[in-house]
Each structure stands twice: as structure tokens, then as C-alpha cells.
Length: 181
Image (cartoon, rainbow, N blue to C red):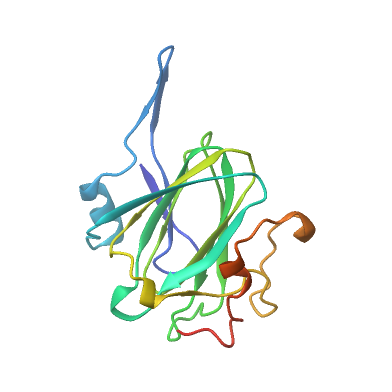
């Protein structure tokens, strides 16, 4: 597995080795020893989540606060997404900056998003299946986010805004300036 840090400290792309033959393929999507060696620490993943979405669905930008903050290891099983991570760590040199990555069933790329980041993704193909590991359990009271089209974050979703499909909850998320950090 090739693990590279993005421009945001602690946020990494992971590219697993793919073994293909006439039967299909095999990948090792996660190995605790490899992960710990690359990141210099262990993330004890305690919850796996999966969503299926149609093309144009935008989920995010979400995060949990306080003791319920979560690190995530995200990947696409089927389809393709534009994945976004935003650094919300106020003492970070990259506070308010974001990275984007195309995650797809073809490239098998994964993104590790540490605690203190908001996360969202835009689905680029119908019937996309998105999967992620979390190192902390979901807690509804600590769940919050930032509106996807925040002017200060200036995220280019590379998609016509009129064609985006968002939940009512995501449309009501606060601006970056008003977010609970």
C-alpha cells in the first residue's frame, strides 16, 4: 500500500496494491500494522458505515465535535465520488483549507481524514456505494457541519449547483464563520 500525506497535515491518500487476474481482483483495503507504521499512531476503528447514492447527491460537510470527534478512512466500493476534507483545527497552519480526491471503484484510492476535519463528498455516478471506517461512535448531539457552498472555503465541486441533490439538513448547515468548532 502506498500512503501519502496531502497538503493538510495528518490527512493521507492510500493506494492499495491490486492483484488482478481472470477471476477478478483482490485488495487489502486496511492493515492495522501498515497504517500504524505510516501514520505513527494507531487508530482504533470502531464503526463501519456505508451509503448508496445517485449521481449528483452531495453529502456534507459533516463532522462531530468534542469527545465524539471522529477520524475516518473512506473509500468507494462501486461508482465514483469527489471527496473533500476541510481542516477545522484552529491551531493548524492549514486551518480552513481543503483537499479533494477522486475516489472510485477503478482507482481504489482511499482517504484518511483525521479528527478535527469536516468531510463531504459529491457522487459522480449513479448507484455509488461509499464506505468508511470511524474511530469513534456516532453521537447525534455532537453532529454538525458547514454548508457545502461556503464562500470562505471556496470549494469547487466541479458540478452544476442546480443539479446537486442535498438533504434538508445539509442545506441548513451554518457557514464556516458560524460553525461550532
